[in-house]
Length: 361
Image (cartoon, rainbow, N blue to C red; front, side):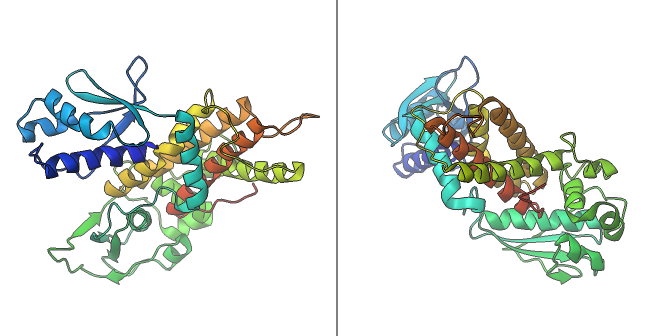
């Protein structure tokens, strides 16, 4: 069971409790679960009972007890405890199975891992000024919300620069948007770039330009210096793309040695340096949904940086390929499965930002 699965399980329990009249409270759009902090109880924790207590007119501990009854018997849940003022703490069954479920989901869904239907049925309109950062941000937000099931229309106040097309930007309409009660328009207003698309493309090229415009939060100024082109790990864009290219090289190397990845090759859950990387991959669907809801592509960029750093920590401590005369083992096959999953997530995230993921750097 992944964190996203657990979140849906808890949300389903809330729906059941409300439908059965055990709770009288509005059902939240989503339920957030987080990995338990050191010294805490269980694998994951959730504060939904505290969130619902006021509307339900019940103590949070009572709300937690109502939800615990409906979650405890769900597949994949080993134990549910109530801690503190009403937190639910979850211990999952067979953590090794949960790890494999994450890797299997990444392998099966490919670059669409983390996409979903949480925004299905929503019709959204975004409107932006004739300014390159606004145009690129609106384009990335479009990609994100579409990945979560929404339908989108993007308009600009007037015709844009011809170079916007080289940045992958598309605009559906120009002029004042026609808002309706069912589809009001949302303005996209990041801090302007201070340069034109043509100037940025000439100096940085499309990938570095998009990363430089999208990596900072929209309320922050976008640093657009030549450090975006540095071929070194001090450049986050290079780090992310280098991590992806390295995962592809591992796959090629394994093929030359005659073995492939197997997520179920490991006899026990992934631990040590593998654990932070696997946790980030498991959390990826939640990050994409949050980025879509908050219209914040910078969250995806930060997630990719974290995955890249965790991948290299794992790669250096637990090499996926044998060295010297060493024969490929079950450990190598399971490590390769994790490395390939990291590469898939990196490529998928870059695609949502409109940036290429080259297999060779």
